[in-house]
Image (cartoon, rainbow, N blue to C red; front, side):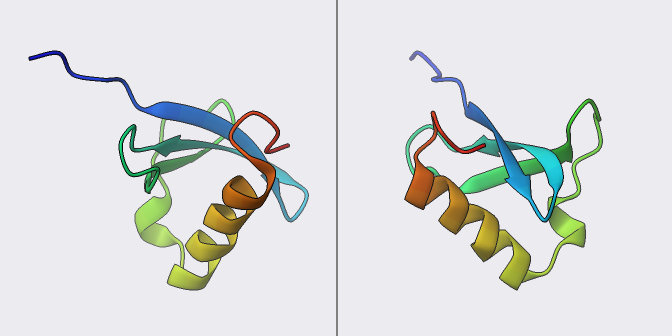
Length: 66
């Protein structure tokens, strides 16, 4: 069984850059980090903020999120 890697996308949200890890199969957010940070802040963010970040990725695509 081959495990597929997650997709990392860098997005701009409220004038800050974040690295977002998406599930390879569902494209759901698995992790959110400030750029150059190793700390996952996804659990600290409200559901509303996570939805806004997901919308940025969905509307702009994973290759043009910034």
